[in-house]
Length: 395
Image 1 (cartoon, rainbow, N blue to C red):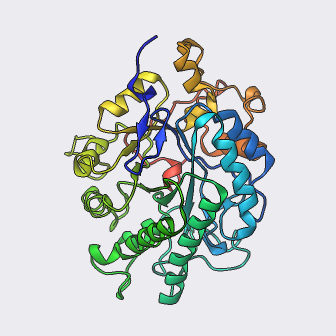
Image 2: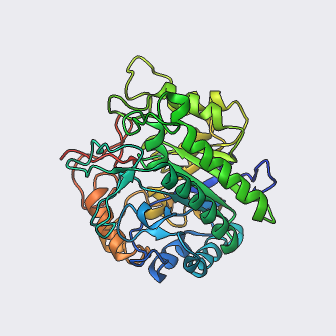
């Protein structure tokens, strides 16, 4: 059997140890109940994939009702969610795995239909560039911003009570944390907007609130992760230089940084003359201060190893875990030849994929799921944003 470094244990600075360096990336299931409570379908889906990865990061959970971004979304907005979240944490942690709850506020990436008639909110009253015909959000008041910051802290407390090993702030894919940092969506003139440093205020306050909550309530090592999208393609918008600046500012305040990219090989989407992979550039800025999770179209053990050799400390795998729930176990037992990198639509039930998620995969990710029935060209996402990054592909 080939010896892979991603199978080696990993220990975070706070002492939390992973049995290997493989992370199951957060992926939307769209399968929670209407009010955000976990369903048995989701528990079955996660159960089929737990036990192999060193850590599983859940699909995103909203911290407030008006932070909901799509139907079937998990929620951590009230104490009513704790019993279901406890079931989820226990499912993810079987056989020694660690469980992280990803939390967020969707901001303007929602609709009044999803919010049952309520207007979406954001840093400024500016509609998103995509999808087309996005609603114009309502600009949050100072008091509302403070309330959302507090909600992130309360959500973290609930995650601790439910038995998770950490939370991940979803500051990527054009959701509210990113909206405040982006000049595209944040054109405020008060303390929450303006120059780059001021646009970082909201994220820094959320990190501080979550850190305070962890210090107050966690009785064992508990992670505070942060996920970022390195670039936006709108003008104005976040450029790689901005992200490197942001990473340098937060790297001593979080447990790990998690990239959101469709390909771990991606270079700058805005500067074609910059040929250094983004993963490497961010690794250089972090300079060993915290672990970096690399991600993007990782399917084979060799690709997972390449991510670590490219500057990451941990490797996240997303769509491949949908196709192959036993990916880690098969690598450990030297059974790599049986790892499926394609998926038959006839096997989706067998793979414990919820019915709603099946439809979502077929409609939004058909070009990258490697369906055996798909004869069209496969997208690699190496030189473009992926749908999971908040981009609506033009058909």
